[in-house]
Image (cartoon, rainbow, N blue to C red; front, side, top):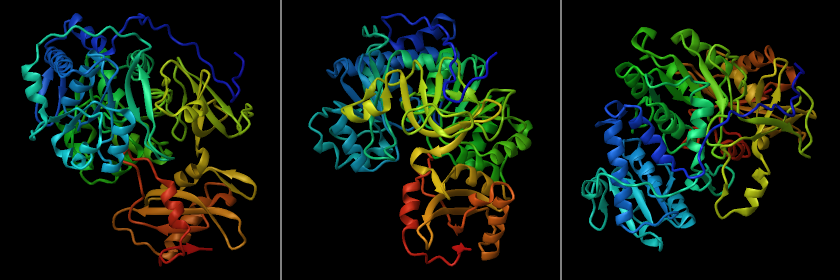
Amino acid sequence: MPRLSSADHSVSPPVLDIPREYNAAYDLIERNLRAGRGEKLAYVDDHESCTYRELAQRVDRCAGALAALGLQPEQRVLLCLQDTIDFPTAFLGSIKAGVVPVAVNTLLTPADYEYMLHDSRACALIVSASLLPVFAEVIPKIPTLKHVIISRGARAGAHSFSDLLARAAGTFDPVATGRDDPCFWLYSSGSTGAPKGTIHVHASLIQTAELYGRPILGLCEHDVVFSAAKLFFAYGLGNALSFPLSVGATTILMAERPTSEAVFARLRKFRPTIFCGVPTLYSSLLASAQAPSPSEMSLRACISAGEALPRDIGERWARQFGVDILDGIGSTEMLHIFLSNRPGDVCYGTTGTAVPGYELRLVDDAGRSVPMGDIGELQVAGPTAAMAYWNNREKSRRTFQGPWTCTGDKYYVNGEDRYVYAGRTDDMLKVGGIYVSPVEVESALISHPAVLEAAVIGREDEGGLVKPLAFVVLQTGVEATPSLAEELKQHVKSRLAPYKYPRWIEFVSELPKTATGKLQRFKLRALAAKPQTSATACAH
């Protein structure tokens, strides 16, 4: 077999027989009823549970209720919902009615929601009662917004979601939609500007399940899935909705913030077989004194996405709990993971190889293929790519270039044909004329037993040359001292080429992150631009 170049890792896509006339919600529900899984448990949240038959009825009632309110096919409904059974009910009910759900982050500001409501021209808002106060001043400003629907609560002038479901008919014929029709939107995190409404088609939900959920995870109806990554997140939507529904598995939902205590409680109580998290969460779980023993859990697979998983975290997790973490990368634009490690074939410190059905290539700034081992921007082609960004032609054209989607992630391919993450395009450092990956330096720092988290950016020295600066969060009980800073620098030097070590170490109590757990380096750059006042900032 000829050796693949780093520029173009192509794989033949599996043939997915998706008919031209296709409604994603109808498929995900009906396949379970046809298979005789109507009485099987579909969802368990913090307050209730439902079978697949009950979920089907809820989805039909939601579709009927939205139609009764006058919502028309392709109109948008904004969903700002906690992870409860109301989320899949509203999401799938909207799709079955031909209405386009726009799932948004539950941790944003009123200004964010005002922008998204205006931008999407949403006709309805379905919102958890606990989140309604954030929308109080926004709702009157949105001229297109005709209906406010409250999940698990009530307010004068708004509809109760449970009351709407109770009054609606128990059956609803799916609106005629096509596999390439707009199905739902997800807003990007907005880390590089205003959030972008990413439009996905009906075929994409089942395609992510058939390309990753079944062949990579080996997901089946006997699995119990628990995703700490929330449903509003593209990663969480696959984990806790399209994947389990595609095979009839049971899903555990958690509305609260994924603290170590909350996650471990559910791993013990429900004994999920598949757990989905992000690197920051895995790190905090490993640091917790409340961790269960492997015998108290039933995990057979864990997955990680959102950011690259440091080698040390993966290796420690596997030693402590006896199960590997499958690190992968996906994006809002591609909907779920397209590059991943495999069960039984995990190489920590890498993101693995292309998921069958996707093609990958690495290019330089001029769009030319890079040689094997060189760093380039990762581009991906595959059937789950979004149609476009809503109302943003310029960024759509920059991101979606023919069959290729530009990820903005830097990678190189190592000697084993595995992809190794090098950072975001804007995060790369040039030290002495040589590119340095901040992720590589961070991984070296995290391997020190005193370090819980680390983030590396560039800072100019007195001569105007860029050198690495590290922000470090220490493990509980570890004291920040100049001698520890020097020890950490030597630790990095012992693992990496000497020019890569951080010239400065700043100890901080936490790192700035988005609501989905991604590091906000731009905030660290702003902090680094200020004069150093910290007694624990050490340079040599």
